[in-house]
Length: 302
Image (cartoon, rainbow, N blue to C red; front, side, top):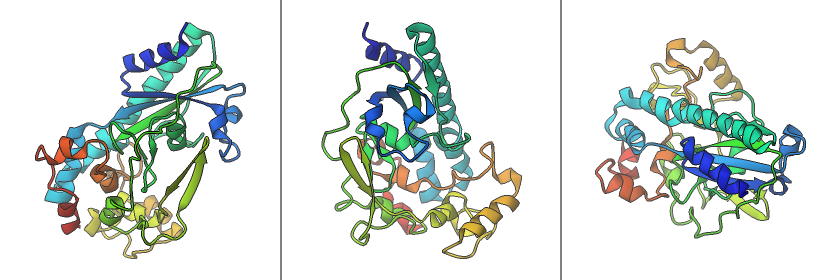
Protein backbone atom coordinates (compact mmCIF):
# COMPACT_ATOMS: atom_id res chain seq x y z
CA UNK A 1 0.00 0.00 0.00
CA UNK A 2 1.47 3.34 -1.10
CA UNK A 3 0.43 5.52 1.83
CA UNK A 4 1.94 8.68 0.34
CA UNK A 5 -0.12 8.29 -2.85
CA UNK A 6 -3.27 7.62 -0.84
CA UNK A 7 -2.73 10.79 1.19
CA UNK A 8 -1.97 12.97 -1.83
CA UNK A 9 -4.90 11.59 -3.82
CA UNK A 10 -7.18 12.28 -0.86
CA UNK A 11 -5.85 15.84 -0.54
CA UNK A 12 -6.66 16.45 -4.19
CA UNK A 13 -10.17 15.05 -3.72
CA UNK A 14 -10.67 17.48 -0.86
CA UNK A 15 -9.85 20.42 -3.15
CA UNK A 16 -6.20 21.04 -2.35
CA UNK A 17 -3.77 22.24 -5.02
CA UNK A 18 -0.59 21.26 -3.18
CA UNK A 19 0.39 18.51 -0.77
CA UNK A 20 3.81 17.72 0.69
CA UNK A 21 5.09 15.53 3.49
CA UNK A 22 7.91 16.03 5.96
CA UNK A 23 9.43 13.91 8.67
CA UNK A 24 9.69 15.34 12.19
CA UNK A 25 13.49 15.44 11.90
CA UNK A 26 13.20 18.70 9.94
CA UNK A 27 11.71 20.47 12.97
CA UNK A 28 14.69 20.28 15.35
CA UNK A 29 14.89 24.11 15.38
CA UNK A 30 11.25 24.49 16.46
CA UNK A 31 10.62 26.72 19.49
CA UNK A 32 9.86 24.90 22.73
CA UNK A 33 6.31 23.62 22.70
CA UNK A 34 6.00 23.75 18.91
CA UNK A 35 7.79 20.56 17.86
CA UNK A 36 5.34 18.11 16.22
CA UNK A 37 5.99 15.43 18.87
CA UNK A 38 5.14 17.92 21.62
CA UNK A 39 1.73 18.37 20.02
CA UNK A 40 1.13 14.75 19.05
CA UNK A 41 3.17 12.15 20.96
CA UNK A 42 4.46 9.57 18.51
CA UNK A 43 4.10 11.92 15.53
CA UNK A 44 6.19 10.63 12.63
CA UNK A 45 4.99 12.70 9.68
CA UNK A 46 3.84 16.26 9.01
CA UNK A 47 1.44 16.63 6.07
CA UNK A 48 1.07 20.11 4.57
CA UNK A 49 -1.67 21.00 2.09
CA UNK A 50 -1.93 24.21 0.08
CA UNK A 51 -4.67 26.14 -1.71
CA UNK A 52 -4.01 28.70 -4.43
CA UNK A 53 -5.65 32.12 -4.27
CA UNK A 54 -8.03 33.03 -7.07
CA UNK A 55 -6.52 35.28 -9.75
CA UNK A 56 -9.80 37.19 -9.80
CA UNK A 57 -9.52 37.97 -6.09
CA UNK A 58 -5.88 38.99 -6.34
CA UNK A 59 -6.88 41.45 -9.05
CA UNK A 60 -9.47 42.91 -6.67
CA UNK A 61 -6.47 44.05 -4.66
CA UNK A 62 -5.00 45.59 -7.82
CA UNK A 63 -8.21 47.58 -8.33
CA UNK A 64 -8.01 48.78 -4.76
CA UNK A 65 -4.40 49.93 -4.94
CA UNK A 66 -4.33 51.17 -8.54
CA UNK A 67 -7.85 52.55 -8.97
CA UNK A 68 -8.82 53.49 -5.43
CA UNK A 69 -11.61 50.92 -5.26
CA UNK A 70 -11.61 50.41 -1.49
CA UNK A 71 -15.14 49.03 -1.82
CA UNK A 72 -13.55 45.87 -3.27
CA UNK A 73 -11.22 45.33 -0.31
CA UNK A 74 -13.77 43.12 1.41
CA UNK A 75 -13.42 40.62 -1.44
CA UNK A 76 -9.76 40.15 -0.54
CA UNK A 77 -10.71 39.73 3.11
CA UNK A 78 -13.41 37.16 2.33
CA UNK A 79 -11.89 35.16 -0.52
CA UNK A 80 -8.18 35.89 -0.26
CA UNK A 81 -7.24 36.27 3.36
CA UNK A 82 -9.32 35.56 6.43
CA UNK A 83 -12.27 33.44 5.41
CA UNK A 84 -12.79 31.13 2.45
CA UNK A 85 -9.24 29.82 1.88
CA UNK A 86 -8.96 29.08 5.58
CA UNK A 87 -12.36 27.39 5.70
CA UNK A 88 -11.29 25.22 2.79
CA UNK A 89 -8.02 24.36 4.50
CA UNK A 90 -9.79 23.67 7.80
CA UNK A 91 -12.26 21.29 6.15
CA UNK A 92 -9.54 19.58 4.12
CA UNK A 93 -7.26 19.09 7.14
CA UNK A 94 -10.15 17.67 9.14
CA UNK A 95 -11.16 15.36 6.29
CA UNK A 96 -7.58 14.14 5.83
CA UNK A 97 -7.26 13.47 9.56
CA UNK A 98 -10.51 11.49 9.44
CA UNK A 99 -9.22 9.55 6.43
CA UNK A 100 -5.96 8.74 8.23
CA UNK A 101 -7.78 7.46 11.29
CA UNK A 102 -10.61 5.61 9.54
CA UNK A 103 -8.74 4.16 6.57
CA UNK A 104 -5.14 3.85 7.76
CA UNK A 105 -5.68 3.14 11.43
CA UNK A 106 -3.24 5.86 12.52
CA UNK A 107 -3.76 9.05 14.52
CA UNK A 108 -4.37 12.31 12.64
CA UNK A 109 -4.30 15.77 14.20
CA UNK A 110 -5.35 18.78 12.10
CA UNK A 111 -3.92 22.12 13.23
CA UNK A 112 -5.42 25.60 13.13
CA UNK A 113 -5.27 27.39 9.79
CA UNK A 114 -5.10 31.05 9.01
CA UNK A 115 -5.52 34.26 10.98
CA UNK A 116 -9.15 33.60 11.92
CA UNK A 117 -8.42 30.63 14.18
CA UNK A 118 -7.22 30.46 17.76
CA UNK A 119 -3.74 29.61 18.97
CA UNK A 120 -0.43 28.90 17.27
CA UNK A 121 0.51 25.23 17.43
CA UNK A 122 3.53 25.42 15.13
CA UNK A 123 4.72 27.62 12.30
CA UNK A 124 2.70 26.74 9.21
CA UNK A 125 5.23 28.61 7.06
CA UNK A 126 8.10 26.50 8.32
CA UNK A 127 6.04 23.34 7.87
CA UNK A 128 5.31 24.22 4.23
CA UNK A 129 9.03 24.69 3.58
CA UNK A 130 9.86 21.45 5.42
CA UNK A 131 7.34 19.59 3.27
CA UNK A 132 9.00 20.76 0.05
CA UNK A 133 6.23 23.07 -1.15
CA UNK A 134 8.46 26.13 -1.57
CA UNK A 135 10.99 28.41 0.08
CA UNK A 136 10.99 31.54 2.19
CA UNK A 137 10.85 34.78 0.25
CA UNK A 138 12.54 38.00 1.37
CA UNK A 139 9.22 39.23 2.80
CA UNK A 140 8.99 36.09 4.94
CA UNK A 141 6.06 34.46 3.14
CA UNK A 142 6.47 31.01 1.61
CA UNK A 143 6.57 31.13 -2.18
CA UNK A 144 5.81 28.08 -4.31
CA UNK A 145 6.96 27.56 -7.90
CA UNK A 146 3.34 27.22 -9.00
CA UNK A 147 1.67 30.19 -7.32
CA UNK A 148 4.38 32.39 -5.87
CA UNK A 149 3.22 33.99 -2.62
CA UNK A 150 -0.46 33.58 -3.49
CA UNK A 151 -1.15 30.35 -1.63
CA UNK A 152 -2.21 29.41 1.88
CA UNK A 153 -1.36 26.28 3.83
CA UNK A 154 -2.72 23.87 6.41
CA UNK A 155 -1.06 21.14 8.49
CA UNK A 156 -1.98 17.65 9.68
CA UNK A 157 0.22 15.74 12.14
CA UNK A 158 0.07 11.97 12.07
CA UNK A 159 1.58 8.90 13.67
CA UNK A 160 1.69 7.30 10.21
CA UNK A 161 5.26 6.92 8.96
CA UNK A 162 5.19 8.30 5.44
CA UNK A 163 8.14 8.70 3.11
CA UNK A 164 8.98 12.43 3.19
CA UNK A 165 9.15 14.55 0.08
CA UNK A 166 12.48 16.23 -0.71
CA UNK A 167 12.69 19.87 0.27
CA UNK A 168 12.48 22.31 -2.62
CA UNK A 169 15.82 22.36 -4.40
CA UNK A 170 14.94 23.91 -7.75
CA UNK A 171 15.92 27.29 -9.15
CA UNK A 172 15.92 30.03 -6.52
CA UNK A 173 12.45 31.55 -6.48
CA UNK A 174 13.16 34.82 -4.68
CA UNK A 175 16.14 37.02 -5.47
CA UNK A 176 15.82 40.18 -3.35
CA UNK A 177 19.13 41.50 -4.65
CA UNK A 178 17.59 41.88 -8.10
CA UNK A 179 13.92 42.33 -7.17
CA UNK A 180 12.94 43.84 -3.81
CA UNK A 181 9.40 44.70 -4.92
CA UNK A 182 8.00 43.64 -1.55
CA UNK A 183 10.12 46.20 0.32
CA UNK A 184 9.58 48.93 -2.26
CA UNK A 185 5.81 48.58 -2.44
CA UNK A 186 5.13 48.39 1.30
CA UNK A 187 3.06 51.52 2.05
CA UNK A 188 4.53 51.97 5.56
CA UNK A 189 8.12 50.83 4.98
CA UNK A 190 7.61 47.86 7.30
CA UNK A 191 9.80 45.47 5.28
CA UNK A 192 13.52 46.09 5.44
CA UNK A 193 15.31 46.53 2.10
CA UNK A 194 17.81 43.85 1.12
CA UNK A 195 20.65 46.28 0.45
CA UNK A 196 20.11 48.11 3.75
CA UNK A 197 19.49 45.24 6.16
CA UNK A 198 22.78 44.29 7.77
CA UNK A 199 21.26 41.75 10.17
CA UNK A 200 18.35 39.94 8.44
CA UNK A 201 16.30 37.19 10.02
CA UNK A 202 17.58 33.64 9.57
CA UNK A 203 16.11 30.22 10.19
CA UNK A 204 17.02 26.62 9.59
CA UNK A 205 14.59 24.01 8.28
CA UNK A 206 16.02 20.54 7.89
CA UNK A 207 19.52 21.03 6.53
CA UNK A 208 18.72 24.29 4.72
CA UNK A 209 19.20 27.84 5.98
CA UNK A 210 16.96 30.72 4.90
CA UNK A 211 17.23 34.49 5.20
CA UNK A 212 14.44 37.02 5.12
CA UNK A 213 13.79 40.64 6.00
CA UNK A 214 13.16 42.25 9.34
CA UNK A 215 9.51 43.23 9.62
CA UNK A 216 8.36 46.15 11.73
CA UNK A 217 5.15 44.49 12.92
CA UNK A 218 3.55 47.69 14.15
CA UNK A 219 4.18 49.53 10.89
CA UNK A 220 2.81 46.50 9.06
CA UNK A 221 -0.35 46.66 11.16
CA UNK A 222 -0.82 50.31 10.27
CA UNK A 223 -1.58 49.09 6.75
CA UNK A 224 -3.19 45.71 7.43
CA UNK A 225 -5.58 47.23 9.96
CA UNK A 226 -6.02 50.48 7.94
CA UNK A 227 -5.38 52.64 11.00
CA UNK A 228 -5.55 55.96 9.18
CA UNK A 229 -7.41 57.48 6.25
CA UNK A 230 -4.35 57.48 4.00
CA UNK A 231 -4.20 53.68 4.31
CA UNK A 232 -7.92 53.22 3.70
CA UNK A 233 -9.30 53.58 7.20
CA UNK A 234 -12.48 55.45 8.05
CA UNK A 235 -10.64 57.62 10.56
CA UNK A 236 -7.14 58.54 11.69
CA UNK A 237 -7.08 56.10 14.57
CA UNK A 238 -3.27 56.28 14.75
CA UNK A 239 -1.32 59.31 13.57
CA UNK A 240 2.20 58.12 14.42
CA UNK A 241 4.29 56.47 11.69
CA UNK A 242 5.93 54.31 14.35
CA UNK A 243 3.15 53.20 16.71
CA UNK A 244 3.90 51.26 19.87
CA UNK A 245 2.52 47.85 20.77
CA UNK A 246 0.26 49.56 23.30
CA UNK A 247 -1.15 51.98 20.72
CA UNK A 248 -1.97 49.14 18.32
CA UNK A 249 -3.60 47.09 21.08
CA UNK A 250 -5.65 49.96 22.46
CA UNK A 251 -7.01 51.02 19.09
CA UNK A 252 -8.11 47.47 18.29
CA UNK A 253 -10.27 47.55 21.40
CA UNK A 254 -12.20 50.65 20.36
CA UNK A 255 -12.49 50.29 16.57
CA UNK A 256 -16.12 49.93 15.50
CA UNK A 257 -17.30 46.33 15.22
CA UNK A 258 -18.70 46.95 11.74
CA UNK A 259 -15.14 47.32 10.46
CA UNK A 260 -13.93 44.00 11.84
CA UNK A 261 -15.92 41.28 10.11
CA UNK A 262 -15.84 37.61 11.08
CA UNK A 263 -12.14 37.70 11.91
CA UNK A 264 -12.75 40.37 14.61
CA UNK A 265 -9.82 42.49 13.37
CA UNK A 266 -9.37 44.14 9.98
CA UNK A 267 -6.02 42.62 9.05
CA UNK A 268 -7.07 42.10 5.42
CA UNK A 269 -6.58 45.75 4.47
CA UNK A 270 -3.22 45.42 2.74
CA UNK A 271 -1.67 42.36 1.07
CA UNK A 272 0.35 44.49 -1.36
CA UNK A 273 3.53 42.43 -0.97
CA UNK A 274 1.67 39.16 -1.51
CA UNK A 275 -0.30 40.44 -4.49
CA UNK A 276 2.55 42.13 -6.38
CA UNK A 277 5.28 39.52 -5.76
CA UNK A 278 6.40 38.56 -9.29
CA UNK A 279 7.03 34.88 -8.49
CA UNK A 280 4.66 32.24 -9.86
CA UNK A 281 4.03 33.25 -13.49
CA UNK A 282 2.84 36.66 -12.29
CA UNK A 283 3.26 38.41 -15.64
CA UNK A 284 1.31 35.75 -17.52
CA UNK A 285 -1.47 35.64 -14.95
CA UNK A 286 -1.91 39.35 -14.38
CA UNK A 287 0.18 41.89 -16.32
CA UNK A 288 -0.21 40.36 -19.76
CA UNK A 289 -3.96 39.90 -19.26
CA UNK A 290 -4.47 43.55 -18.42
CA UNK A 291 -5.43 42.90 -14.80
CA UNK A 292 -2.75 45.24 -13.42
CA UNK A 293 -0.55 48.11 -14.47
CA UNK A 294 2.21 46.71 -12.27
CA UNK A 295 3.79 47.49 -8.94
CA UNK A 296 4.93 50.89 -10.15
CA UNK A 297 1.34 52.03 -10.61
CA UNK A 298 0.46 50.97 -7.08
CA UNK A 299 3.49 52.80 -5.65
CA UNK A 300 2.54 56.01 -7.48
CA UNK A 301 -0.80 56.26 -5.66
CA UNK A 302 0.22 55.08 -2.21
